[in-house]
Length: 174
Image (cartoon, rainbow, N blue to C red; front, side, top):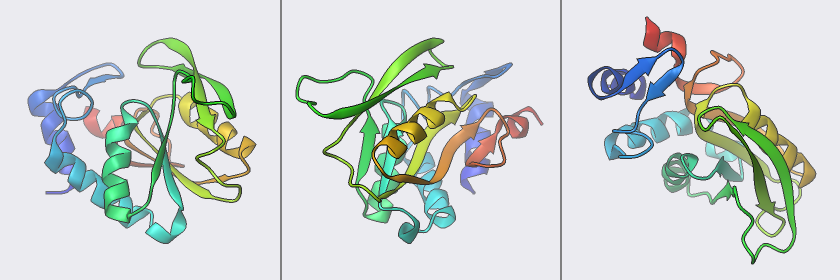
């Protein structure tokens, strides 16, 4: 069974879809299915060869699980953008972002000590709704003198063909 097939089955059996709201708390972002994430990470590594990126980038907190699995398979480090600036973060870049899931604006922080100029970062997240989070991540990476080598998500609600996804909203509704 592919990652897409398994994800569709789990959404049908254990999740729900109401319009563009997809409840995946029983296997993606509250309770985590190891087998599903393993398949998803394999699909990401197949799509994004490990020589195409230096590090993986995501946003806390839901993207951390995906980034962890991809990091383990690629043997690459990952960075997560923080939603609150810790006291220990002295030099940083920041950017505002709107969260569709939380229906609120947030500020994302990237410490200057965790990236090096010229690095290629693979941006991954659980969902892509309207692109606000990935656009903010891209701005942060540009401020740091790095580049986004690719964008991948588990579920793309926008049906955007420019990003890699395991599943698109239209696949769920079919």
